Image 1 (cartoon, rainbow, N blue to C red):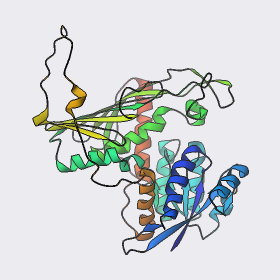
Image 2: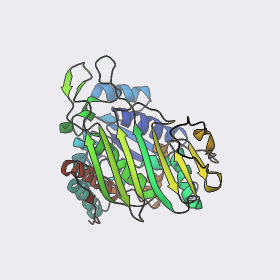
Image 3: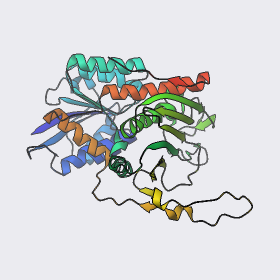
Length: 380
């Protein structure tokens, strides 16, 4: 069986590397997505974007025949019932609406829209159109978080008390060394900002591992007010490049997560989550996960007059893989394809995307107003 998928935004870094190259093309190379009955679904991508030269080059590089700069033409082809969007946030909402109007199933990067109301409107439209819809939740499929989920399911932690997350790295300003991220990330008028980018991730990580976010207290700042774009031209960085958040979760768990593009890394991975419970603790990154159970917890004594000689980092035990973990983006692509073709359950829909955007908006509101923001239930 073949399934045509319109892929919009594949000339961008994320759309090309993670979604086309490491997901869809990797699925094609393995012979498609295996269904419950043992049959396979092979994907047939049609590339869509604004730059014909880039599209032509990508298609030629990977032996693909179908590409276009006309989204309406792509959506009118009934051989392509699935639409995927990895464009800039500002362009995404309109394209998703067009795809649903064309009765296409839709799968998209996040945030799904620029505002919560826009995200809810997309969810309502999807429900009215009867199309299957999904939002990328890639971090849930990463080895480190899969190990963390295994610990939670086993009861390792006892009662979970708190979660502390550290994410980020130094993104160069772009003058004496080129920046590692596109300049639009640092312009609010272009949809940039670390809160809008990362709080959507933290929302689904916290919700699916520990409990839904019930309130947000955050401080968003712009540490570096000037940067240099891809052409070496100085511009005003109007978007937040760091955010410090406290998230109160259902069940009483407190999560504190720092996000920054202005921090130098002194940890094993670019993101790490420490989870502390009554029976044990764990530190999980994207790939690794270490634990310290209650019975193996040392007994430090505070004495500032003496140099500390306990090897604290060596007192943790590595959690084994015990399984082969595929690329997180690819794994969710396969899950969503099975949802479309086999009607397997999918919890990561447009409403999940809306909840993530609500957490981001609450973070910005909290920072702007200097207060804790409570979150109510969302409904269509």
